[in-house]
Length: 291
Length: 159
Image 1: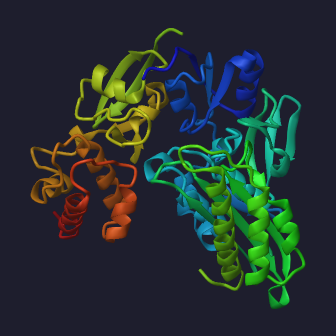
Image 2: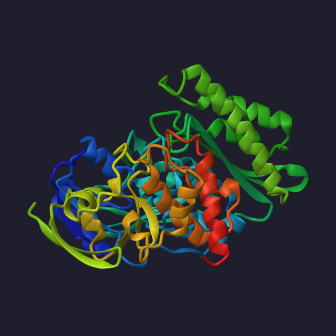
Image 3: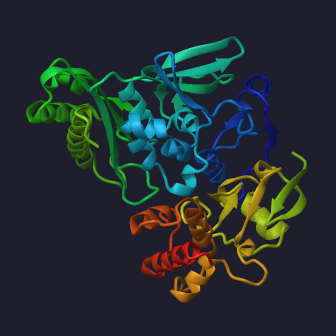
């Protein structure tokens, strides 16, 4: 499949890329890992006249903790997340997530920034970032601003970024002690989008009382969803079989799946329930220091 | 939307080409450089038949524009054999009957070579995970796993 013709531009800096975005407007797309954009162009579902390649901009591929946040540069590849000692030791929810994205070859190119900026409800990082209550840093002609991930996804394939802004960094609040998270995804085969996925992040106090909880849902709505009612049902309560069961029912009710080749609406709702139970149980184990 | 000049080091040799920006790397490798060992399978980023190394990392060359590889190094299946001697991975696929129709083999071997460079002694699970982006419709993967294990052992013995 041959994509339509386009002009290819290599951006040397973030400001350079923003200048090009201003110049070419709606005709331009940012090329990051390209693992979603290039297939879309080959299918001619996207036909940008200008591609702005940001892969050669330096300084956008760091993974570090600073100022109370885990800061991940937009060009960090999934394979880099998987190999990062910091992610492996301290951010199990992120590690779970990256390991089930596409396949290992795609993960050598795919970037975390692209996964979020694409605004695809079937992508995996959105649910995880909703659970982690992350914020993203975007840079535009007026400078930098921060957008909470909870207000990032405005519609199908649509984000709160304006056409001349670039997502440069993801900031995840460093979790306190006795925190843990997990991501569970059902896919028909490696590389498929999720039939459904659930990300859960917990912080528990004495006697497993829930101090902080975030639950994000993948591919069961027009946008990535935050299971707000399920979270409310757990906050301040003891996390146990009973409360997890109740939260999972609420998450299933809150999901908005549609029937497709991956399953019926009813099936997907029940899948959300089951995966929420599994994700919360694993997250709780990890709060207690388990693997 | 004119053509632009790119320079890529392919299997150690400096290559130059004038290409349209929309030319996919796999088409550049096959049609411009004439290296047809790299296959086009699904053309949708699923099957991995087009796997090559881009600066040492295995990637699907049907999902990268050739212009993106400007200034980079790529290695294709033709670059595995050195001085008439098969790479241990190639030898493994031969000895352990790791192919039937052979269509997935170039990509499968490129992924295997990259795996063994990173993990010289992979477990069976690690092998199966590493090749999970490469589809084979003939072998059922059993002999592919054995081929990679053969190569791993040979490399450890200092082939």
